[in-house]
View 1: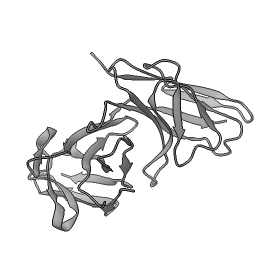
View 2 (view 1 turned 45 degrees about the horizontal axis):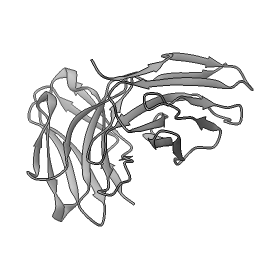
View 3 (view 1 turned 90 degrees about the horizontal axis):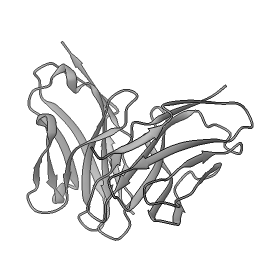
View 4 (view 1 turned 180 degrees about the horizontal axis):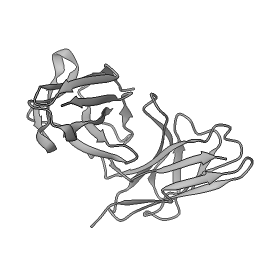
Length: 112
Length: 114
């Protein structure tokens, strides 16, 4: 079955450490997205990519980086510059205009 | 830019009662509209969407929503709540341009009383 796979499901980061969250899709979708979810704040867009080798900053890109070297993959790196990284991270993908998003099951990142 | 406002961050209903979740959008032209559901520690699942055509949209799990241009609304309803409907619900909007981004509301948490 087609879908989006996020890994790991739980991730722990030490202070000053960079960590990378994986997102892979086999839906042949053009666009991919990363959202951060905090209690009571809904979903906030971190980065998105509408085509391979191109991506744009969302509303809260500071302290994060991404790459889009393959259509299927859109990894997110949470850098040490992100001062408050503890959150639930959701990856999504969508086809061309008119389609909704398909979401992964999320990665919960905790700073220890 | 498009945006949505969900009225009420928490809604409590009795099992078997009507579920009504309110969503209003702001957009210069009729946008694409979506409702998603999220269960604890999971991703979001699409309930239904409005793109064009019939303004009453039926989705999964017995939910439906009506697009009302005059009221800039897209409220979600279910005639009879079930315990399994307890979750968080998000309304989302995107424009009809080549920008694929969705803008999400803050979410409404639904609890169902036995």
